[in-house]
Image 1 (tube, helix red, strand yellow):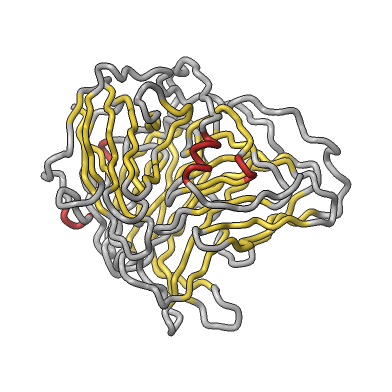
Image 2: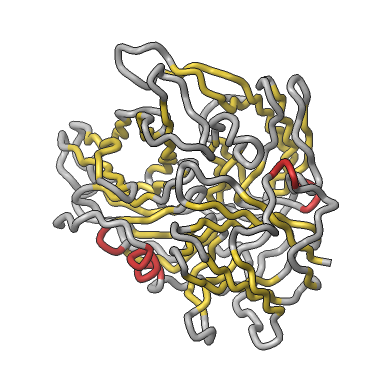
Length: 436
């Protein structure tokens, strides 16, 4: 294998994903509920980000029991408890599945300092998700994210299952972390992989890896590749895809996006491979796969895998009778998080079971990132006569461009719409929609 140049363009992402097809399967029978506690604490911690320099004070999201990746199984019923030990309010948002009764701002308000927020969350879909404190107040302090993995009930034939969480930090001249939503042109920018500027993932030659890439950056769209390795994409934003080889060996992720990729570690024992990141201005090494000295587990790639088990999203969408909504991103109808409440009028309403087609227009000079709460959507073709064969919950819309998406309203309630420019100083903006 040879390394193609690492280039960050939305066209490359969409062209690569256009080869995707979702496995159309009937929705599985109701899953048995298993009650699971998830206790989280938001507090200020210290992280060593610069060799030889003092630790940096940053907000953290600690979990109990254990403090690794949050792993559960499809069908689990979580009782989530967030204790807020930060100096300001804290509000937890979870990507990868929710319920209207737990929707932030519309059903739950931020927990005050010293307070606690408790809610129930059914894990109806397997996939890679995200626990996020950034919906409320990330323009006053940089806020953390945590990976949330919901395993399939069926076994997946891999040797390792690893999360690769990419985060960014900007520091002023005194080494203090700066909040997004304001100018930081003179700041020092750091990119971290699993919390480290020099992350190494030990592997054994011949292993098949399931790598769950998560863009935990505040505003940046990023491209990732592993030198001299192919990546076979299996899921996007937590939903299974028909497996395909990533174009030019790279995956592109908007802030909050997730991609699951299968990687066969086929380099010889004792070698290594750089994990490369492109943030739109330059490519840089972010970490390494480090091969151990053990004898290779396999000398050739394992047999190709079929699609991951379906989560039961609809096979077809009825576009002819869809509700059609023009939704410019930004502007006076969009609210800062502190200004949006359950009393704020929704951007649109639709009945349960009906399909909505949203025309997302970006009139601005920079790409915009759009995130839909409560549902996953299809990206429609330009002629509105079909859709790309994958599901998303987050989409980047180019400057002065319009994209059309469609989703079936399967979950009644009020849900958020998020939009922000892909730029550090951009504010986070919100609207809502209603399924009733």
